[in-house]
Length: 312
Image (cartoon, rainbow, N blue to C red; front, side, top):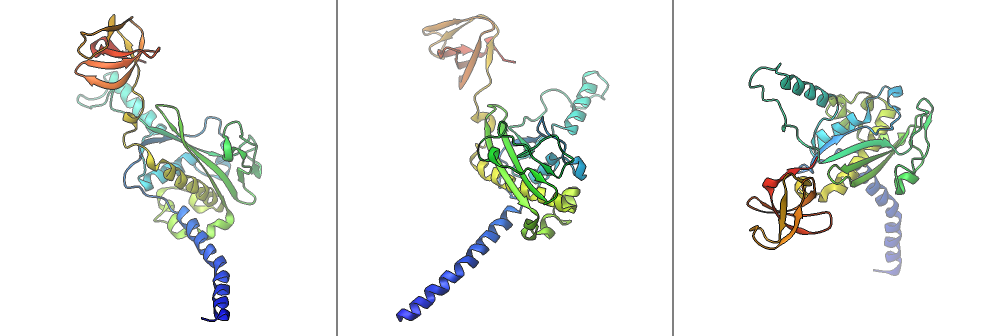
């Protein structure tokens, strides 16, 4: 191969780089515009609105963003969804009827049946203020959302149809924020979103997404939240299969005077006496009725679970 031929191939390769990069970017954008699917649920989750949220969606005739996220969850099968909204309120009314004796016999409704949420997901705008009727919903939330997301500016611009959103996921047992992802979208992104698949009758349009599927601003907001949801699923891929077992065991309270022993037989050295009302923290180790626990000072030993009750 001559030097001239080699130079020609090199020039052609360099010229093709922008096209290759554009194709890779196009593929990445198309992937983030698709609802991810999971082989197994990552845990049980509830979706709530932020407490200090401005109802910006009502002026655009949109449903609350929590309903949009619930559609993502249901379609992706990445979480088991539990209702903590209207459905939960209705369920509690049924339980009130059961406890008052108004329901038929053998209705099988009562305590201990509600599935616990492992995580809570909250959809929000990165920036929000009380000017929900304006063209731009701004106002930095640096004190609420830290890091890269807190430094972003934009939120939702209705005139230029851009959206800057954030999803946060909190572990309900530890209160740790286990994931936070930002999503950004603009009107020009609608070209690569695969409208027919995502917003058509076989996608969100057929699932009751309303204005999120039928309006440009709704579609832009959907793409932003979907980008964040994809990121959240990626972040949470390494979560334990059993969130309850992976967290610290619920604290217990001494119900009757007891002693903390150095061994599970309950016949060894007494580490200390335990007064009624004292709070202890099980380590998860058990032998029969004996539980290994720690007190608030780090003393570890064994005590009979018959002398304990769950702390409230």
